[in-house]
Image (cartoon, rainbow, N blue to C red; front, side):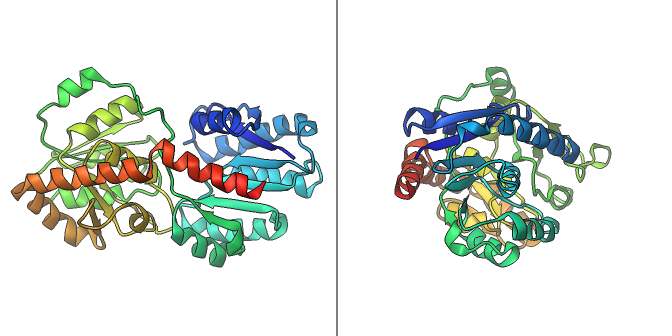
Amino acid sequence: MGLIVVQPGHHYENIVEYLVNVLGASKIQLPGLKSLFARKFALIFHSASDGLTLLRNSTKITPWDNIFVFSHFAMIVKIMAKLRLVRYRELYCYDFFIHSPKWFPLFSLLLKYIDTERDHYIVFTRKEVSLYASKLGIEAKRLHYMSYGDWGSGHAQVDLETEAKMQGADYYFAGGYSNRDYATLISIFSGLRESLVIICSKLNKDVEEESLPKNVTVLRDVPGEKFDAYVRQAKACILPLKHDTGASGISTLLRYMRNGKLCIVTNRSCAPDYIEDRVSGYVVRDMSRELPELIAQIEANPELAVALGEAGRERYAARYCRTTVSLSLKEFLVGRA
């Protein structure tokens, strides 16, 4: 019995490297997309292409092997198993999520026909266990909570030019692509004197540059090192989540915490597992009502923002760094071997 990791393109590189070099997994590499964020047609096309690549490599998988697969490509693998094109002992879907409630009926119907007791899901918030059990019909015993972690080396590239440019700038920051309520956030800042910088994707359609207030700046699809440079120079970072459907926004939240920035998070599923309200950040229930008050407090007492940001950095180092999360993953996989 072995462990086979199916890698989409060059994504999840650090996790794959750990599974192969430390846990002795075999790897099947798929073409994959250049970016994990793409239009639906591109996702469907590349999923089909990746499925054909996996089919060509199906002889490498035996009925005694466990398969480790990422995100929604697990659905393709399970469809292939249903058609008896692939056979495995157990499947572990890492980074499974559904960010929008409108997809629940479709996935519920799909899983009804392709899901089996051999299929397991690793999720990044405790709430997803009960949420996906009730909305998708997945048995709770096959949903395994594990903290999302920073699998990077800890030596990210630094954009010195942007760092120097933003030094001394006076702004709040929000970033990321999926499940973001930027429209409400922009509306809030239209009534404030403080400045806001948003870095998002070209796919974020609720952000319209033509109608932005003067104190809001929007950048799209910037390199990761430039994103981090803007984070480091911000007064505080905001995570304005739209739907309460699970672990969206956590990778962005951890970037904020790693850089020691005060995090303001809407009260969604990720908040209780990653931020302790008023200890390592702020959790708001009504952004329109609470955010202006919090910003006024930060302006009046910037030292508090620094202290909460440092508390968040310490929490990140203790719970979400590569050393901690890799040990959790190892214990899970070894325990199921």
